[in-house]
Amino acid sequence: MGTTNTGSIDPIREMAALAHRYGMWLHIDAAYGGSILFSNTYRYLSYGLSEADSFTWDQHKWGLQTYSCSCIIAKDKQKLVRTFAEHPEYLEDIRDSAHVDAWDLGIEMTRPARCLKLWVTCQALGTKRISDIIDRTIHTMEAAEERIREAPGWEITSPSMCGAITFRYAPSCIEKEKYDELNSKIAARLNDETDAYLATTVIKGKKVIRMCVINSSITDRDTAEVIDDLKRIAAETETEYIASRA
Ligand SMILES: *Cc1c(COP(=O)(O)O)cnc(C)c1O
Image 1 (cartoon, rainbow, N blue to C red):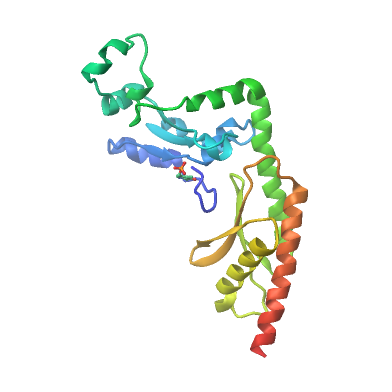
Image 2: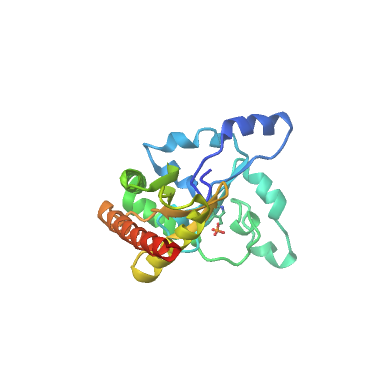
């Protein structure tokens, strides 16, 4: 739920039906996309998640937390206990029978109170504000997608999903075989010459540029500036390439 490359979400309900039919454990990697659960507008995209036996949810991605704050949510907590609990003699006296000790739910024993910062964020902001923040990042990315669609020579290779888009410069005046190299060069120059940093990735064999806004302090103005820089750098890189070919 929310792939790193494109933010895409698999058909969870269909997969859950298969998992149930064959008695398989269904674990969902919602490390990044899980935070759409905070959004009143986009929560529907997680449809089927409740069918999972467990899922991963990184709060240090889109959940407003600093590293590291990640959770495993399991439908049946006792299954985590049966997997991870150990009962050494030296812990007998500090064992609390009234509740499950955190060290029995995962591989760590000594651990910082990672949940505290998340709890404080939830208490301080409230669910409505957090929902608005997640929505805002998604809207920022949708606006960026629109802007790139309108730019001549640019194409969207995966639309806005969970705050991520991928795109590339694919002008008709340049041979298709040169697009990968061209886009790598454009991203490298953007990263060298400006304050922005965009990584490339590969979608269906094509080298593309990935933009992902999960920080709500980034505005439409910021992404517009980055896109203007991309357009300028693309034009320069294209001119240089055509000159070198002549
Ligand atoms: C980030 C990410 C991971 C890895 O999570 P870490 O918190 O870096 O260990 C796994 N899956 C997806 C989809 C991610 O986005």
